[in-house]
Length: 437
Ligand code: XUL
Ligand code: CO
Image (cartoon, rainbow, N blue to C red; front, side, top):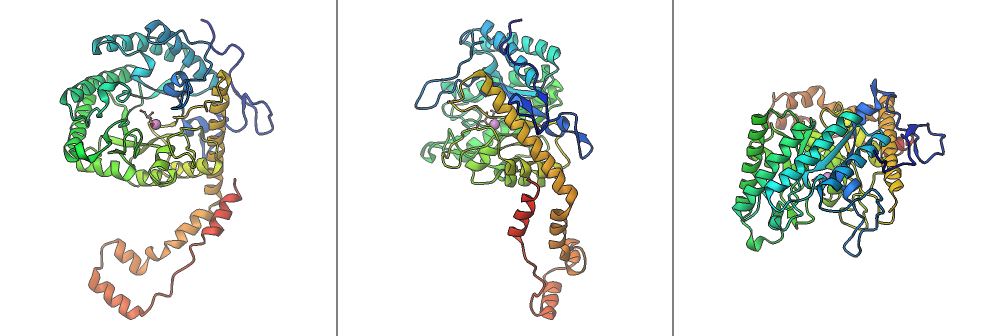
């Protein structure tokens, strides 16, 4: 088999003193953190779309990426070859998982039947490659946003034929995900929203989305697929407003349409930024509903204001993420999926390695820092102390539902004035975190 990365051998852990850019300084897969190997905490995943299909184009310029293994667009043999190159990449990187859209691994056909045939041919190679390399599928998904037929959305299109087409495509994508032993399946509503309310029946479109997801959950049972379903929130882009705006909107939607038992959330950093939230806010909202399933690890650029999908290299960000992930007891089916692309200017194949190594090392450090903060205990002690008034006395009675307004009025009248508030100590806490970074 010809090699796509002939000059690169498997990336090794060399420790923090290493100056080798093609080595991990912090990600040491078998090192134990809180009694569990790093690789099981982090469950790193490489995305097919950016890594193999991202050409570096933007709205002002053509693709800039040099990809010597490319044999061309639109043909199945080239797609099979590309899939083999992808697995070579994951294997050399030491990433245990990957994620893909149906149409980024195999070319669009002229008909749905032909597209399905193309997909089957490439999935066969992916299955072989999974077996050969040991790399597993974190999740699969259907690409329901590139083709012009999805101009008005897919499940929320104004056109019922488009809904039917999308259903058929998702059915197939779920089936191949199942065939590949996927740990999950993601629904990201690429164009499930609107660009103007002048032409939009919002309630009807949301009802359709609810019905679509119920059909997917039914089909999941029918084929015996045990993987986890996720919704990936994003507020906008390419639509002006996407129905799956943020974690809270998704949870409300799932509750309203009685789908909470079937779905968890896949939270992406750059989408949180676009929604005007921090990543940790989105994670905490999802975790509070016991619906934090997986993360799309990337970051945006606060000055650019669109979904730049950069590799996460900010230690504060990864520390915050890992604090929440550790607090919820870690991933089960989910993982740390790099939905991230190299910059247009980072056009050489080796940049794909540098970028993923940077993301993996930054997350490994975030994990170690978060574990150290937890072991130290001062942050948790502070928070525990802050809420101590709820552990006994009137607070305990309120939490246990033993008192109502009448009892609380009697309590407050007797108290006269609140004299028990304590400082929030934000600056003290920020400095405390800095001790560990
Ligand atoms: C787009 C995005 C998607 C999903 C999968 O912003 O994040 O790539 O992760 O469809
Ligand atoms: Co994503």
